[in-house]
Length: 270
Image (cartoon, rainbow, N blue to C red; front, side, top):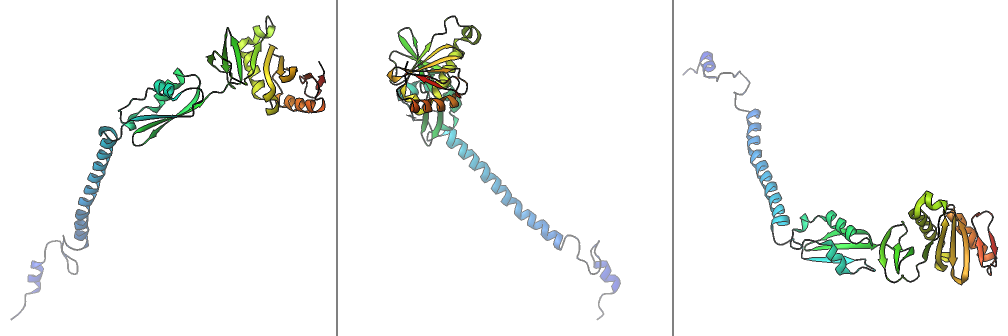
């Protein structure tokens, strides 16, 4: 029996197909499309998992009762008490730990307790807030009525106390009607005295009892053993410190030293 003719075979060939080529909708193009359809559900599942994870994390941090503030710890205090710091910090107990405004806590502490130089507010998971405090240290104290004002190395007057802290030199501002007082003001002169005291060599700083300021360029140090040092202005502090150490070594029994011109220091018994 004769097979189909060429015409018949052509009639059976699908439209768009040609000899030696696969019919439309079949072959590699179709396989790629099938693979794409298979990948899309995986991407969708992955996206849903990410969304669910984010929602769960948000609920855990902000909506659950697990990660909330239950305790406040304080470290680094010297004069202040931990209870004073906790009271001024006003940390919101019971609030979600993640939503606590650490910047606001720091601002409250610095505003309420000027003795605090800096504070680091840290979250201590899962239930705590830590307050790491650094207090200011007095370089000089100034008498004010029957009390004392503590002044730190930056010239900040941060606390008034009834009893002078042990070992802290006294600031004596005796400018009177000095032109320096009118020109620079008492605060500037006090800052000059603080800078001199803070920059002294350790050996001299241990013996310092008072800093007397009569004018911008007339600062005198009062040391233990009734010794005095005419310092002059606050300029060239390092050179003056070195000159004073050398002078004390060369004239150990001297009672008065002059380092206002550090290249030509002088010493005398009175």
